[in-house]
Length: 204
Image 1 (cartoon, one colour):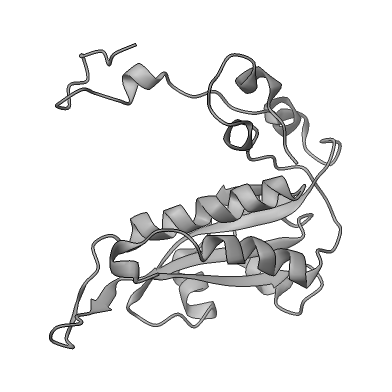
Image 2 (tube, one colour):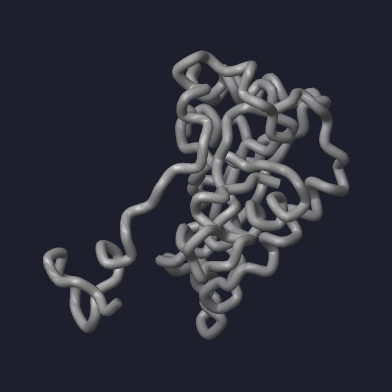
């Protein structure tokens, strides 16, 4: 499991959340198929509009024939460290829903929001089980969409790179310096009372 002691020292947020961060250094080990499916099963329980569950997970493990094909869609920077991971999971969601009243398709405006919620649950489940997850958007979306044979009404959002965290020796000097939990802006910059106002401070 990833840990972030600096975050947990003075916060009321659950350690389960604070300890999740996104390393890039992984040990090139295999992941048990049932372990990976358990992480994805956690995503199944995310909330969604009308319980439509529009997200889909398309995955490969490092010992599967599809591994190199999945890696080939990543930008070179991400491929350089993701090649040591144990699994890659692409996250997509359906952009339309079928009306229960009319039976006609209509836009599902919350599909990306719902897929994001499912993705977070996957990451938290994996972290609790001792695995690290680094979400990325740096890949060729058109090539991946075609290579995954996604229907046209599905949008591809991100990929989850999953692995066992290593000590950073397999990273470049520059990346090794960055291999630590990142900070966040203050809550006062994110939460506003009653209306949006970037200059207004939220309540303490």
